[in-house]
Amino acid sequence: MGRAPAHAERHRRRRPHPVVGAVVAVGVLAAGWLAFGSSPDDDADVAAPGSTPPSTAAIASTTAVTAPPAPILHWPLTGLPGADDVGLTRPALVVKIDNLDGGARPQLGINQADVVYEERVESGVTRFLAVFHSTDAGPIGPVRSARTTDIPLFSALGNPMFAWSGSNELMAADIRAAQMVDVGHTPAVDQYFRESSRRAPHNLLVQGYLAMVDSHRADAGVPPPLFTYRPDGVPAVGEPARGVDLAFGNGAVPVSFAWDGTGWARSQNGTPHVDADGAPVAPANVVVQFVGYGQYRGAGPRVVAELVGEGEAWVFTGGQRIVGRWVKPSVDAVTQYLLPDGTPIALTPGRTWVELPPPGGATLF
Image (cartoon, rainbow, N blue to C red):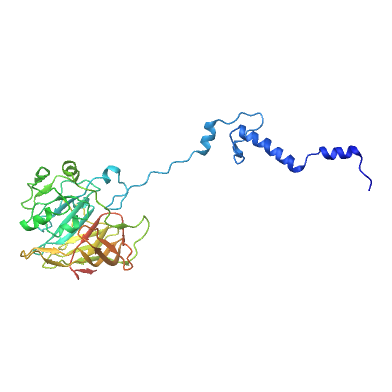
């Protein structure tokens, strides 16, 4: 082949290589992006030739991050939403409440308690240990004397305030040595009054929960959660239950809880249990914790529940009965309610009554 003309050779040498041309083009575009403070990925922010570069505020507005919503706070003893920082830092008030037919009923403030324990005392009588935290109440009562069964119940509540009207000398010494702030009738007399429409000793009342907190909260702590709760919309998994009859032994009056579609309506001695305002007692959950009872230091009819250890438990929640076990390794430990595989039993958010009958003291109906 003949050699190409010299002018053709010069033309080929002056033509830029395709790769070199691409690099030059990228360099020009990069200079444009840098001029506007952008990167190649910010296509929306690249200004057209001859236009005004976007302001810093305009660029920032496109990259602003929306703050996450504030967390929903739940009350530790009910699992219900609506708690606030102030409420979560206040102590619980535990009140020993009378339950004698013909004298103590109807009680005051009982439906405002987050948790109520029912325990056997002497002579076939039961009494309540009511725990107030999420809701103010007042007046509360009638307040009666304490028992050593109360100690393992209130000791798990983070050094709560304990309202009581006294006890015999031995029991009183044990109670005062326990983990609580004593706001009984003697040290906190300013927070009690006698109701003239009731006869003694069933007429001693606490003025109110928040009033007691404001006046006597020194050294008191904050209660931990006592139960596990199901999320909204998750049904209870157990066996359908209409209700349960309870027998505390030693001639105690019969107690029943019947499912009413939203809660477990309580009856005592064949009559519906209502508070002093006429509102039915119908908690969202009933925990039947079977416990043994022994004699207290040989003190005649005085009994004490065996609450440290483990045993059978029936949990009534969402129209179901769930059979499991309770476990409490020490006096100040929170009692756990567990399925056979060790999973915590989940309750319905709301108020809970814990019943403490002896083994065999419960029958389904």
